[in-house]
Length: 263
Image (cartoon, rainbow, N blue to C red; front, side):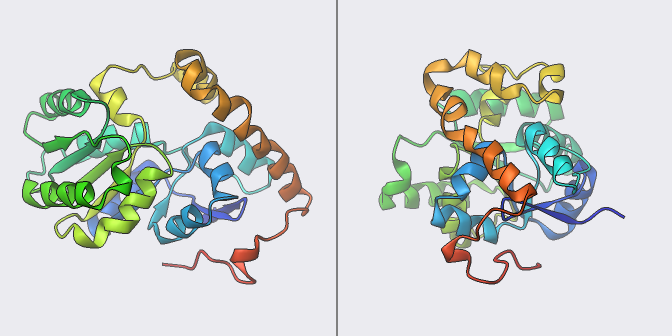
């Protein structure tokens, strides 16, 4: 029997399939984060991000590299559930459910609207009811955040998909979810809005399966992503080796107990 959660660098990742996650969301709703290598590296240093991750209802594996690492650590994850796969699976799953209405938050000007049109055409109804592209630095502007909250609350949506990048999207969801009265499901989906709009192409399936999606994205956006992939995220492999041989020290702020308590 597989473990329901696996510990990767002090982050508890849910070991569930796409179908299991969709079924649970239908019954319980909740907040979904999709940890990838970049998240796990940032979580080692960003205390607020780590605290926010604790509050998510689901943390599902977004990276084939994490799948390889989990197997190396002797706690294999059954299925990769990336945000860019989860979101289209989600709207197909609810395609005929008129009660599900989505608000898209993120993307450059006009991108979310384009994604909205394409998604609604696929499902054959106005499932995405509204969109908004927030300005740069919006998360530091209380008035802008209140404007966004009002837009979402007035939209009739009960699902919020946020694609503004990590850790911004996860922190924003955690900070304002209690103000979003009608939202039952929160999805932090990164670049998925761009993928759905068609203005950014996903890596070929074989590259994703081989753990090379990062290389495809680096080649597509070298100016923006070179530092993340070639400098910041390299520590992931060292940290995994340290976990394998029990060399990682617990962070001071984690104290003596596991901060990820059972739901």
